[in-house]
Amino acid sequence: MRKLNFLMAFFFILTPFLLSGQSQVVKAITTVNVQSLGPQKLGNLSPVITPVNNPQSSFKILLGKQLYFDTRLSKDNTISCATCHNPAMGWSDAGPTSTGTGGQKGDRRSPPVSNAAYAPLQFWDGRAPTLEEQAKGPVENPVEMGNTHESMIRSVQDIPGYVKEFEQVFGTSIVTIDMVAGAIAAFERTVVTTDSPFDRYVRGDDEALTKLEKQGLEIFNGKGHCTACHWGGYFSDGRFHNLGVKPTDPTKPDSGRYVITKDMADIGAFKTPTIRDVALRAPYMHNGSEKTLEDVIDLYNKGGNTGDANISPLIVPLGLTKAEKKALVAFLTTAMTSLNPEVANVKPIPASELPK
Image: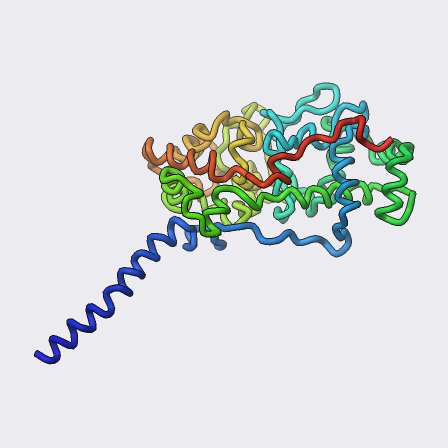
């Protein structure tokens, strides 16, 4: 009897801890304290790491912002960085693919500049290792800005206001492409999503997400298989995958990452974009082939375009119900949209306010 009483007493003492543990497990799913498929937990973004050879300063950031919105960097003075990476459109554009000088159409959609500081490689195919190198590319791309580095530098050098600012920031009035790219990259490193309903929820505000959005988060982190590629604070693995995306022109398939690596496994593979502010960036995929988030989820739900022989093994049919897809869309649409002004409310610098 004494032994039985002892066991019963021990059970009653232990029960609250067991229940507490169960409650914490459930809570862990909704507050994303569990690791699903990706090696990093979903959560807030860590501070941006600034390269040693391009330190931040307020004057450099301002210079970079001016250059970012200045169409004079293009051949015909019509295209700026912001033309294809518009703050009002999730730091991308209206798509489906980007429009450059002379109304030329590119083959790919503009990746978002917001949070690009966290990407280990830049561009859809990863051909640029840094933001600085990425900033150099569009200037001399014949379909984008259509200029040359030399001609663009001459244009900047002919603007006394810019010469004065470059001298203040870099200590010399002789402008170089590395200076231009360094200033633009410095500005872009300030475009970071630190405050969305999801971020507030992770920081402890249980009311930041609705019940439906919490359900969507659990699906994102579980049955939806989303965290196979979209994990960590950046919501991207920074890697390259063939998702079975419908080609814009089946007769001219885009080889993606293969062009850079020459690895057959990379045929049709493209970089995983962040899903932060994703609701602002329709249409979707590297070629803008999916018009809505619902279309994207339907593509994933059926396991991608099964006619693609090189599709990633991570892409499998999901079996999501109509209600689960609705919850997932709710999470992506509202919970992941930035609220911090330095991302959400950045306005273009009018031409009248740029250096003269």
